[in-house]
Length: 125
Image 1 (cartoon, rainbow, N blue to C red):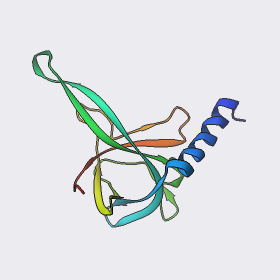
Image 2 (image 1 turned 60 degrees about the vertical axis):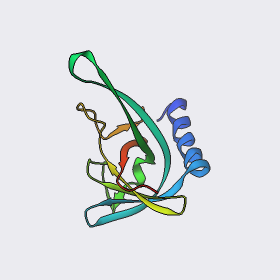
Image 3 (image 1 turned 30 degrees about the vertical axis):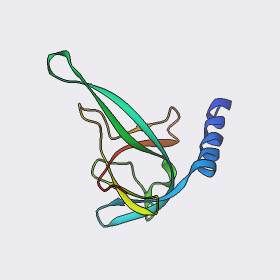
């Protein structure tokens, strides 16, 4: 039985999706699905040579993990997938990828309810 915090997180994800979500298309090769996502952003500092760090900004899409399915098969995000979003009336494609330095292309929330998927725009509005 989930504890109150875990139940609250599930409720909060539903509220987030309803209040701030937008419909996007998630593609992997020829497969695609439509799901509700919330836009966000992440900033990473990656170590470079000689003690210098590089600041990398990523566009994020937060999606409920149970919604990311192709057909009836649930999948995890993977680098190289594409999220198609309409920004300002223009279809924009975002490639799923990590910021570099061995960082992953996505992260779980603490209760494994949603993915925070890191992306970079392939096309700009």
